[in-house]
Amino acid sequence: MEEFLDQLPQLAQQKKKENTAFFKKLRKKKPKGLDNEVQQIHNEVFDEVDCLTCANCCKTTGPLFTTNDINRIAKHFKMKPGNFIDQFLRIDEDQDYVLQQTPCHFLGTDNYCSIYEVRPKACREYPHTDRKKIYQIGTITVKNTAICPAAYKIVERMKEKLPL
Image (cartoon, rainbow, N blue to C red; front, side, top):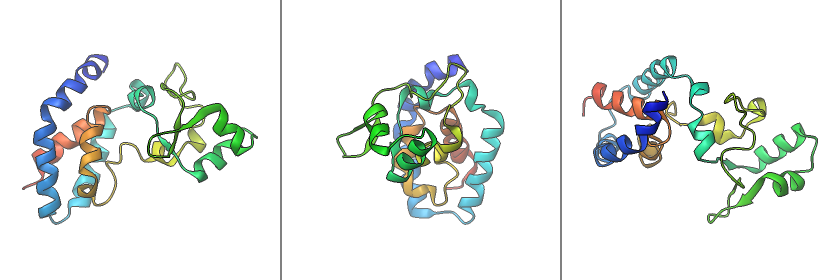
């Protein structure tokens, strides 16, 4: 896994133009049964990929924190939301709450998340490859192929299996 992770940004960059074109076609054509086919591919890949051997998303990027996320996590820590924000978050250029730094403060050396049960929505949904109408998020999916080995493999299998 480590070797593949080291190569992933370059592999994703090499495929970026091809993957972007694929999602543009997908957006126009929308094959029948797309959601079911992508869900099946997603499940197959996640049967092979163990996030606990990777955690690259937690090491290199940070999720957006919604107000609900902040309130839920602050409650978990028995903190006031404002104190949670001050201790762990900052406001980015889009005026969203994000982590002050990466890797994620809540990621353990064993790649386990210390707030897994109350983690942000963005973490629960990442890499968003089991989402219905994936053609609507082609740009973010292509971006995620450089971070997440599963996202990379899912897009590659989608290109193999979906007739466009």
